[in-house]
Length: 161
Image 1 (cartoon, rainbow, N blue to C red):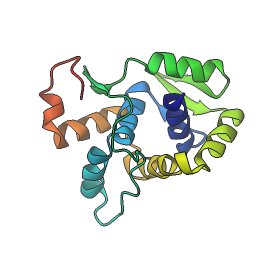
Image 2 (image 1 turned 90 degrees about the vertical axis):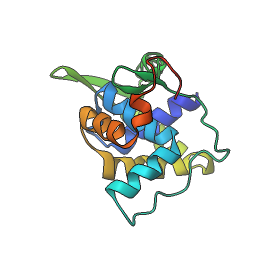
Image 3 (image 1 turned 135 degrees about the horizontal axis):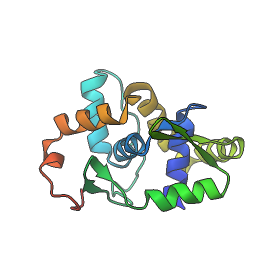
């Protein structure tokens, strides 16, 4: 349920347009889940802008990602996105060859209610920073991550990050 809530809050932060494509969603989620990587990229893209509070109080990554063909990936995305669609919290629309994910009115209400809690407020703030400073194409985000973190490029496919 935490993973569904995290994705719902992330997608909601991108407003009515939502997030264009699973690759972009995966890269944004990577930056949300890995605060040290996010902070490094914030220093590069927006020097002087505070990265905000680490949303993961324990410092532990709740669910690690793997190195996949186009960078960080979580095989659970299919099930998580399917569950959110099945619950009527997000919709998907085909935009050319890319599926865009956006919240429904019910999804927005739930995301707002979650984000108003102490447990999820930092996730909402981090998601807003992602929208403001990393609202790039999926390919551009992948390239940025690869250029900044060569260790990811050098990791074998299927290895945990």
